[in-house]
Image (cartoon, rainbow, N blue to C red; front, side, top):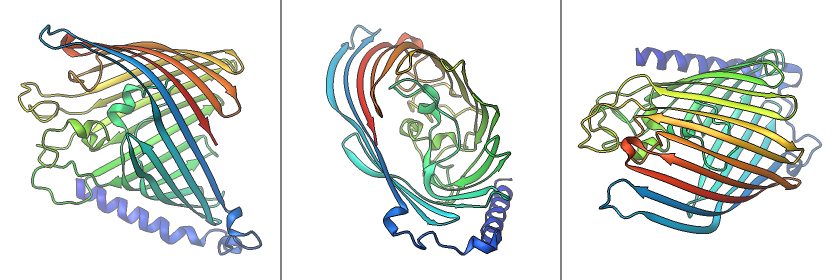
Length: 352
């Protein structure tokens, strides 16, 4: 079945590549550079985040020493370069500084059709279209921790009714694989988002290889020798109303079990099927001042990976244009009461 899906995906992608250049022939060959110099076709944007934090971890085991700490540091820098190559071709590169490392976080080419045929193909390193991960908070929501996946991929999609419906599907290769598999494409992803009216967005997505997610793969005991790949499914809703309120809900679940000892700890006697949810509600007190609360949790999240329950609040204050000051508090409780965490973060972020 896997190979049939792969072949079908290849034929679809090849078909799009062959057909896209044929649309709008009167201008399809028009290269944007025309009278515009190259620097008018390139856009540079970025993000700088500075964070100060306090954290405390209390362990249930009296033989394990509790932890406390604080820090002030440069948390993240993003620099994005977007280039309009032709009318239907764009290139995107995103450089990321995080955890004292500089990486090319994204690098892909987008081929898109005209308004009469709004199809698109994205090829390169990208975040696959699994999950939505919207949040008011500084700290990532638990569905993002479980599901966000950055890989080299081919993703094709089509938009209906402008931006009302967006359907996408693709393939990617991860170094987390079944025992005996060669280094070949082993992941498939599909998603759909629906905007029935302004302010409301619904969506669902599927991945055939949850273990490929950026955070979960760090907890895989033997990434190249899984008994079988575990698929996952996610749903989300985002609803903004009355120009003041925003509700966010998301749920992601594995569709099968990881075998005993495959994740978290080789001595773990349990088969694991991670699932998590996040619910947030935001309220604009003023035009530039927002208060939001979060309630989240997980099953089979392990003693270190995902909290069994998490709750907290954040205040976002738009000090100036593209400048935000966030103050956040979160409390987390982990599986089997192994530990509880309390964190407070102040973040100053500037976008340009």
